[in-house]
Image (cartoon, rainbow, N blue to C red; front, top):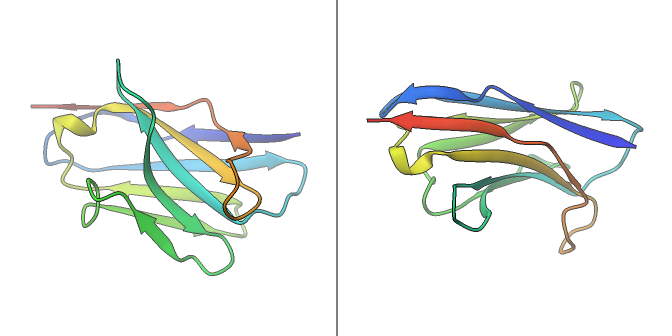
Length: 119
């Protein structure tokens, strides 16, 4: 069994920063990538960023490009999301997920961490 546990969410003022972490635990597993998604109340879950596990290559949603940075620590089995210049529209529950096979669905999901950005 694989568990993904997010942390680092909270309340921050617009323009501020937060760093989210997602640690994978349980059985050892090979993954193609790990990603971050978010879901605001009344909206669909949306893609935020993904990092290819083999070489750390990142991809971002246009809405966060230039403000967010995804990174990984292979030794700690952890993926991070550094969020800067936060806006109220970034308010959402943020989820991390692991994709085992390129192009396929994400196989494992965390429970989510709340990020709230106030004016």
